[in-house]
Image (cartoon, rainbow, N blue to C red; front, side):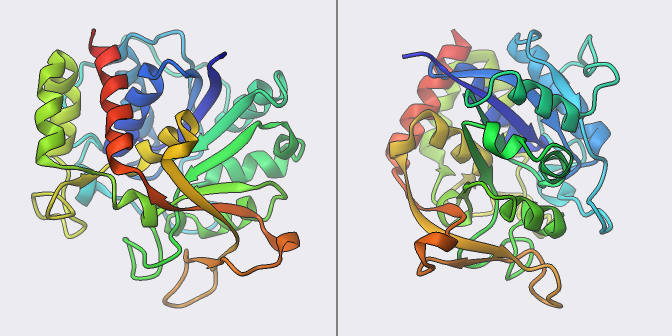
Length: 314
């Protein structure tokens, strides 16, 4: 079977980095581009991180294209207290020898790359949805041209940056509202799933056999993961959640994540609830705009992850 063509829109970010390694290493995926957005850290840093990761993994043929430096209408927020000043925890990758693609903006790159192969490219967004919102506004045909659209973001339950909202949605609720209302089906891999996918001590022990990949990237990223309060240590007692990798894993192996149809609306006006993904699993079929992840095969997920990582490390 031919590999699935994917483009990842991201804000690297520790978990974005782990997701990019999965995308590079999984034989069923063909990474066609990386677009960057401000989120975990600022746009210059997320783009620099993407370039460093690209070079470290030896995938210089994959274009990196910078996008939006901030939300549509709000002031930017960041997650340096979780991901560290660089965005990559304790990882210190060498500077990249080449920069992002010329004068192209991520929004235009997405439209051109997906439009050139309609129905062939799956778009995966693992950061705030600013680039995607502008893309569907400027190029509404994009909605019907993607093969699938998958995000890491949101929650049918509680949030992580506020009690109501997950970070990627809270960072630009207006963009998320545009995206969920664009007329396509959004596959939402949110906290309900990702907080189950922890890099436990046992998982990290298995990573130690992966040579330079583990020593220079995977393990320093994970060791630099901090709680949302900025304190050293994992956000969860038993390990670090690798949120963004779950969205890529769903594309590689859909059977790993159980999704349920739902209507998702994004709260933009609430005093306490801005960025909340209000999820109605009982919505009429005609109103459904999302497939929402509700459960994950954790053992199968880590087998997939570590197999892909092993291929990169060879």
